[in-house]
Image 1 (cartoon, helix red, strand yellow):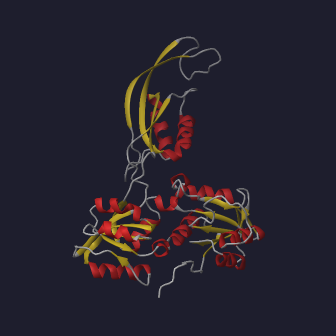
Image 2 (spheres, rainbow, N blue to C red; image 1 turned 135 degrees about the horizontal axis):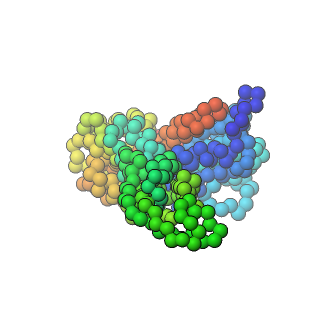
Image 3 (cartoon, one colour; image 1 turned 135 degrees about the vertical axis):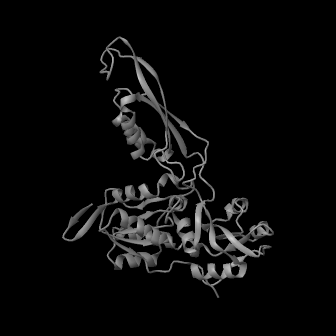
Length: 373
């Protein structure tokens, strides 16, 4: 990022790097297409517009405000395009973006799946406390095991912690160590830290074990090697079957005080600014524990029931899914747009935290395609 005549110029790849640090793109769902949609990683941008959906109206707003960057929650491009002729709103947006040199970036399910992402923001809006991820991610945790001279163990540990390893729940700097004796023989051309060429050497070493999310694997390895005294670093990496409770779809938490069902529904309607709610019948009289998922989250209904929540707030619920909730949970369809609208504010906060002086706007266009009568 650089400054020119009071204008902050940012390289698009630096923005992507900043977003990735807060909402790793590796956490997006397999069907998703988050990241750069239009533009080059080397492109310079000076003004950004944040929106939920990149529509023609939003693009017109970006042009009017002289923005050369649009950051959208929902991807403009999900699947491959066979032509761009302007026949639909997506193609119209693509044409206008290219014509005016506007880069388009999407930050979608990776923003949903981080612990303090869209769902946490929604939970705060509804007044939930003690929130946790509803469906922790699987196949995301790895274990690093390495060995180094005892006198250098603290330095190596500190380096891999700094790179992001060692987080378990609300704890950090988590590791396990054991002392032992390592052996090696340096061959011709080696430059051993200890020992002599062609002589078998035994060294008092410390075995260090710690965990890390798979998407920072390369950073962990680089930090370990940079801090390790050995020319050839011995290490093992294992994929763990443990759940990763720092990421995953949905959230569950508790209200400060239990609420009657009618009062709870009124609160949700008011806090989300929606014209109406669809909900299942329920046998509960009071609501205290609440599960939620912004957008289309009905796939989490079994997990919401299993969590013990009395209510589950999401959007895009199908007719027969309400039957699945009967007698189990108060299922509330508050709307896709309504439950994800706060993604705009969250994206603004993330970018501003990383790029303090970058010119940034939140779109004033209501992109909700659904009207209520």
